[in-house]
Image (cartoon, rainbow, N blue to C red; front, side, top):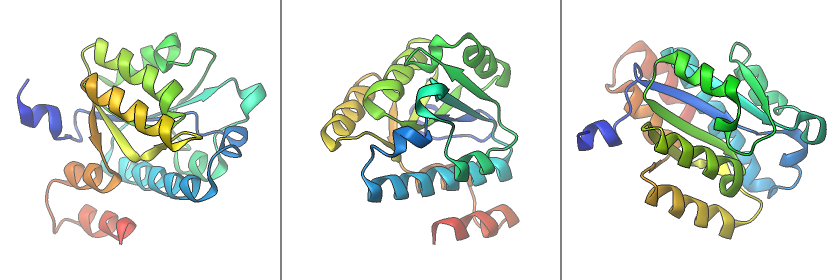
Length: 188
């Protein structure tokens, strides 16, 4: 795989995965961090919808942790959502089947908690040979130390650390299009 293939996202190869951004788990997060992460995940969801990038949501043990936060669920109304008990999304046969069905080789990862479900998912996706981009400003943990440690581990596992704006502009590729005019407003 070329360096460009590893580091540049392509809207025809990418899928966006939103991991476990659930009501009761959000209560345990730092309020300012949560607000910025939900905003960034929302930007990514709106961008995915505009650019025809498939989206998959997961929810961990809904009975205990609640559903995906309303703001994000509304922006991903057409996306499939899979409940899971395994921490890794890859522990859900439905998730794995849905991901394979997209035919995409680049996975953009957002969600929580970075050091548990996100980390385990990323490692399994990398082990399966997929290119993984972890959106640092769209993943969160209850503690900054756990967040940082997980990001380091995922990078060592071969995931590409990135940001919301980097994802957006890589998927757009060029300025001046109607898509650019519409989506660039999301990050101003």
